[in-house]
Image (cartoon, rainbow, N blue to C red; front, side, top):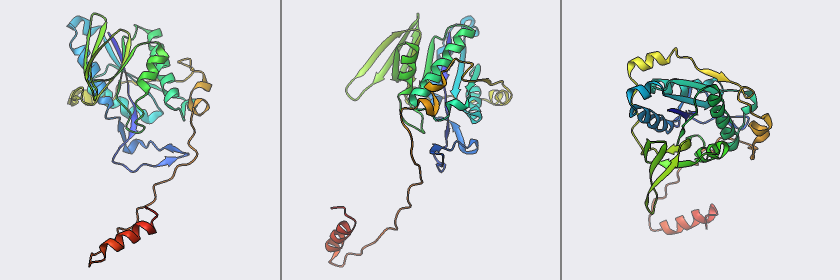
Length: 268
């Protein structure tokens, strides 16, 4: 079995967000693997762990990212968790890609992997990227590849060429199936990601990360990056600082003071 896990390097959610040319500044010093992608990696590794030993030996999990060089941070963390191979798609034409452009590049990367070796049975992603929170890339990748896509899985099982997924909605519990090959996104409640052991942490430092350009995977430059984006950010600026809190001591005129405050700030 061959599984591709799409991972992303994102700014640390606790760090200050900065923008350069209306794009998020992805400083490798304050970034990390998207936390929700750890659930996707864990799901992939558990599927392979459940295989018979001989079949597991012939299988692999590939971490795939579309990013500049700082995306290696996410791939190194993927190695620490136990993936077998890591690929970074990097090209200036990809800068400014929206969800559709990102899905196009990821799907092209999957096709390139298949052209070099065995078919990809399953593409797994996290439920969202914490820098964008769009949650649409898994479905778009499925559409690009022409494969069924099941999103927000809480339980995952693969047997006899069939993907079976348990999913929770506000109204019901669902069990969905799809034939392989397929695309899957897992919820943050699907599992508890494993802690890397010392051996994998040390090995991840020197493991090879493959790098492909847009031309290497057959991407039309007009379909990705700023050229292919369906939206455009015209400006980006830090949020204005909050005004100091105004405390009003109620000495019998608190209601009047509150009404004056609401009127003065055009809140009523």
